[in-house]
Length: 493
Ligand SMILES: Cc1cc2nc3c(=O)[nH]c(=O)nc-3n(C[C@H](O)[C@H](O)[C@H](O)COP(=O)(O)OP(=O)(O)OC[C@H]3O[C@@H](n4cnc5c(N)ncnc54)[C@H](O)[C@@H]3O)c2cc1C
Ligand code: SF4
Image (cartoon, rainbow, N blue to C red; front, side, top):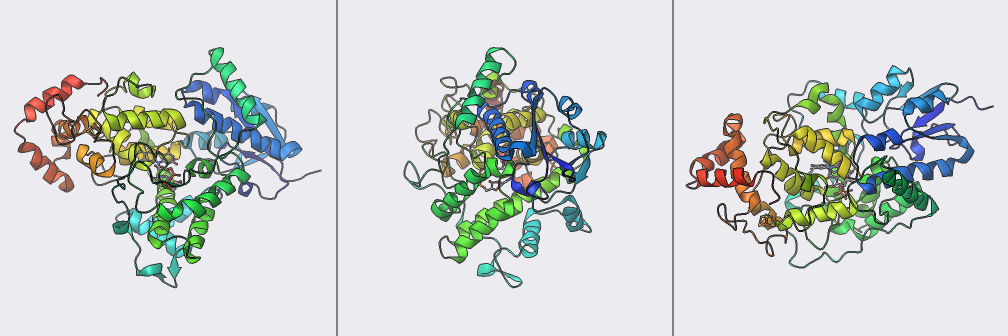
């Protein structure tokens, strides 16, 4: 008889590292209530169910796999004690603790535990990502020569973040294609049936699954990225091309967030490519910064920020999200080429890279004063890699500035000039990024000034906003512009 405590694996804890020994008994629960409560992207629902069912099939008799309505229903059917690795949301954490289930510290899906971060925070006045990242580099000995960073500098941003090349695509091989199997066919059939029966509702298109759901698929996808795309990651990491949604991004966030890849494994693979002379330092450092810096920082801040963080609304933004945005179904309605193109990409895949998220979707919501809690919930539902821990700091904080500056020193609001510099969206657009007022006024440029006008008092104390706010006072057409944007309201731009 097996004496080890059964490990309850949540749907984002599917890699082998979440078990203490390879033969530990497992509980896996597919809860339909989770899907019923919210309107997820179809690709996300597919990914989660497919990943859970693939793990259950791999584990065979080692796992009790329960397909039920609620977690409580599942727990009634399991005998004996359970343990879990630190769940990744407050909701799940409360749930297991209230039921007396043993919680083990994190360290399996992330490199940083809550205790590690508390130690780093202790005695610090400012929690800068750059300082955290350097601490991570040193303690994990990543891209280091003794006590010094490889190449003599910690930050190669000046070699990265360039505008896109003047061609339609980067011309790189696409991310590794995954092949659907009979488990995916069953998932598709179930989702179709539940939708037909009115039990669930989705946004987005049902296309062939593109993200890994097994450890084997994830390992292959990581190896493919390192071999074929990492080299070009740095210079184009902030650029956008209408015909090239993937650019040189890893598109591994769904697999890492499902727990199929450990972040340090990704970091070591990238460093290995640099040490072997297969990828330049700027690209490798840029990638390591994202994974060992940003991802771990965001995860740690989720637990570090006060519990009421999700209810913050420092800019008093209360507008409802319009239906054309919420449903991603805006073809023909949206004239703004950047927004139309990004919404289309999102509808097709449930994924776009960080700049369309921040500078197109998030920027538009911020400019229009949409309710930050609704925006955060929308991001979590529409993105295949969206989870509570990643949403709160990234969306509520960084993108919507609802925390009043805990996460970033100034709001990420910007006009069409940024989008014009970093993409090829503007050339064929009916609007002109340089025009503020009139029929060709770019909604991002006009929206930026209208945002400043609406929040001038709230932002007046922010030193980094002094210059833009002075610019606002010099606008001759300010009144006309504000009236124009009020008139636009929530209609599709
Ligand atoms: C408004 C907004 C919403 C976001 N929502 C999510 C989300 O729901 N899920 C999610 O995983 N990431 C989110 N991010 C972070 C980032 O956009 C995605 O991780 C990235 O685009 C995923 O694509 P990729 O794997 O190709 O990333 P790459 O560009 O290849 O970057 C490498 C890895 O770095 C990590 N990473 C980089 N930045 C962040 C960050 N800010 N937070 C967390 N991880 C990061 C991811 O694991 C990613 O796979 C969001 C960022 C913004 C600005
Ligand atoms: S002109 Fe404005 S609306 Fe059109 S693509 Fe450029 S930024 Fe977007």
